Image (cartoon, rainbow, N blue to C red; front, side):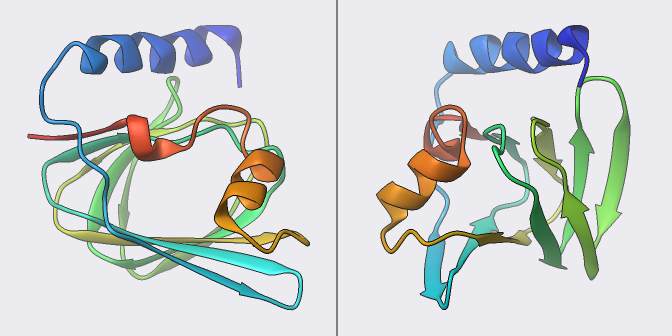
Length: 132
């Protein structure tokens, strides 16, 4: 990701932090045999800025439609889709409909806190989600 793209995402976070409406989307966490799965339920109209991943992961969009940008390129994703999320990339998204987004990571962590510390470069999405 270019420094320009990272700056665009950072600018979006700063603008959104000045707005009301932050909320924490319902999220389920699963751990099994060296894997961590995070399943997030995002309401239509929600803007979300993800954390930068330290490791690649498998992404599954199991429900809905979302516009995703890495600050340079924008794509519309419609469920069902499965794809690899590269490390070092931060993305922002706008849920066009209700969305179910799943990440699957390889980790020996056994708690959400351990997993977040190992897998993400900055604070996880909890502080980077806004509802219209």
